[in-house]
Amino acid sequence: MNLGPDASICPGGNITLDAGDHGTGTTYSWSTGATTRTINVTTAGNYSVTVTKDGCSGNDDKNISLKSQPVVNLGPDASICPGGNITLDAGDHGTGTTYSWSTGATTRTINVTLPGTIA
Image 1 (tube, rainbow, N blue to C red):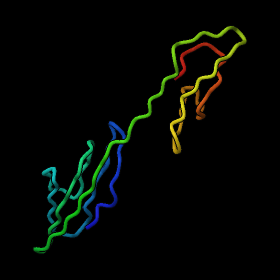
Image 2: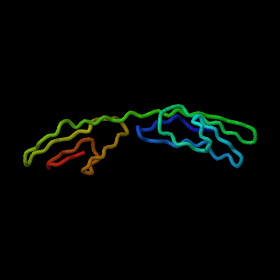
Image 3: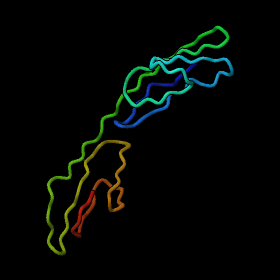
Image 4: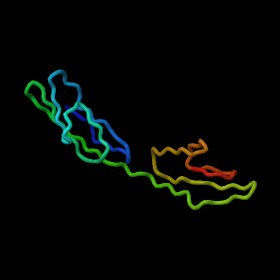
């Protein structure tokens, strides 16, 4: 019986914990009170399950933590002159960060030359 390594979820996210298919006659007892093979977890905490089949039991637990949400601050609204530009920087949020601008750009910074709302 193995729920795998501890895991993290983003705020508002979820993860499914699966105790595995142990065949007919298996019972599942989760620390949440659930009695199904799988549970959907949306909050941080330690989750455990006991699996019983043919009078024998095994158990495991898994800690779920919340990842911190990146804070993005593009600064106050700004104006540009015709023919001018401004660079917007979403900030360095470390390895593994991806960026998705409303313009379709996927870089940390974008150069804006036209008026409008950019997110």
